[in-house]
Amino acid sequence: MSKHNNEASQKPTATKFLDKLFGGINFTWPKLILYAVGAAVLTTIFLVFPIFKDTSFMRMGETLEAWILLAIIIIANSKSPLDSALKTFIFFLISQPLIYLFQVPFNWQGWGIFQYYRYWFMLTLYTFPAAFIGWFIKKKNWLSLLILMPMLILLAITAHGGAVNVIHNFPHLIITTIFCITQILIYLIVFTKNLAQKFVGILIPVIVVVGLLLVPKDVEFSTNQPLPGSPILTKNALVEVSDTTIAHITVSDTGEDSSILINAHDYGETTFTIKDGDSEYHYSIRIYEDELGYIKTDIELQE
Image (tube, rainbow, N blue to C red):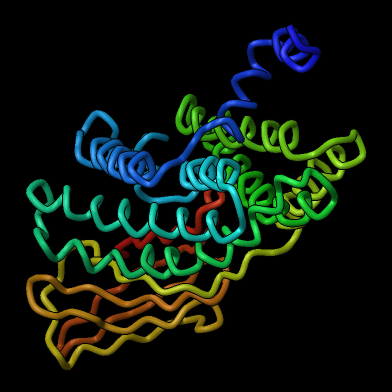
């Protein structure tokens, strides 16, 4: 037995698995196509079946953490930067539209669901240059860490958001949290060589997350909401807000489906009145951040 084979046989099973996953797969084009179709089928299952609703699994069709892993597996098993760029691009070009196509029979919008593909199509275009550059993570040096850093930061931010959900609504998103943290650790094990690189790879994402927590959130947002009491408003309805530094409010829909458009500017509570001919409707509105970090608006009808 050669020295190389002897060293390989002495590696822990987990190390052998990571070596195989991130560098030991012969990603031929037929395999890549099957990989893309399989990812699309799995994602569609998570999106369509009610058992996965509002779970970490459903997020595969909504957020990026699973797709980062799938892309890095392709990149790590590519033979050159161009090979990496082409295969990653084709993977997304096949998988993403298939996800929408497979959902057509199950979604109330039918073919209209493809309106949401625009975001993923733009992301697909981005994968070509990103995967070309990303191939250099295989060098396992400081450049590798620099290239990995945006993904490590994104995974850290996602893990933090999942952890907040776990704390306040256990076990919601516990799988997302573990999945993101595990990815960070695996990438640092596989694509960095020394402890200094690994330490920096953990430290910078942590600093970014802490920094984001310390920066006050921008409250500027708009939302359309129905009115308590379900008043039937006409096109002549006008809104008067007591404190416009907190929000501007206008009537957005009239008739039986009357609702208001809220343009929020700050946290706080104020009142507003809707005048419609001889009728007046008095409300209070509170804009606040809930325990999970989401901005909420509560509207109450005042007698």
